[in-house]
Amino acid sequence: MTELASRSRKVLVIPYDQDGHVTLEGENEERFTLRFGEVVRACQLHDSAERFRVQFNLLVKRLGAWLKDQHEVRSAFLTLRDSQLLFLVVTETSEYDADFEDALSDLDIELANDADLSDIGFGVLSLPNVPADSLESFMHPTTNFELTRGDNG
Image (cartoon, rainbow, N blue to C red; front, side):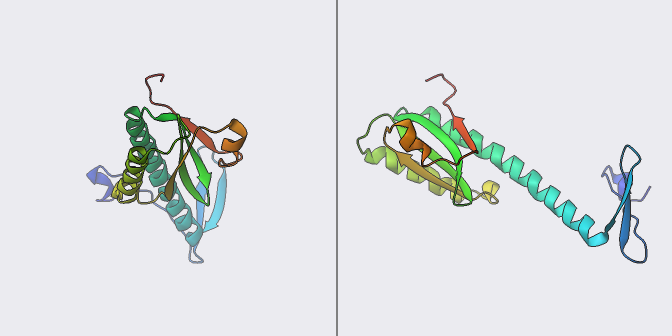
């Protein structure tokens, strides 16, 4: 065990040969060989995916907390649009509400400036109470999450 590993950190030892190839062995004892650079890129991708997962969960919690106080909201969705996440909010009425729009803009600015959400591209959009077919035109064909207040209303 190396000194670093003895300090309660897990260390993955990656032996590679003089040609820069790494042979990995899975739990089922299957072995496969990759170039060292591919192993590094795989580790970087894994790290990025984990950071995104953590930030996505935080974003959903923050949006849910914001929704609790927004009684003007009929429904809210997290969807994909223009290669980023979109918080799509449908209001109870078709009338413009300046105070609500200000609150939504404040949320957008707050989240955009949050260092804990730095890896997530994000935007907000509000719609008046529209028919389902009109709403669908703003949503991604396959990736949509409906967010609720958590109070069944």
